Length: 209
Image: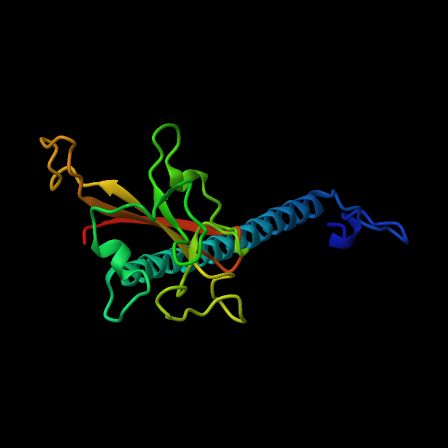
């Protein structure tokens, strides 16, 4: 006679609790750690992208301000309306109003002679100086044009500024004469500012009258 099936099974004592071997817990913790790291990395990438986009926007504001200053300088030299300094530039053989180190005299602010040695003058002038003794010309000073800056919103922290150098135009000057008869062209260097004054862009162009 065969014994009953239940008599072949080992009976568990009362109060028996099956012990966990711990592998599931370790796997879950590893997965949570990996997911957390991926989340942190995603946040950092998103923040870097946002920061990069903001920096690009601020530099674009500064570049546009610098380009606006170049246009204002062009109006200063020869614009559709009369400028108080038109006669200075029209006579492109007379540079008596241009000063070494740049002038800050009334009606002649920002008029410069090029450096004869060392760094170019536009690398030595302080474009951030907005005082009454500044040697750079603020946007609209001689043209009467306006430019939004220093207010609310995304706009330049301060007005863009420029200088104008009189440099010899060797293509049009008569260098064979004694003394040589120089005709001058004008090199304009402008600095624009972003939403913060430490965000700066410099643009430059040559203007022949």
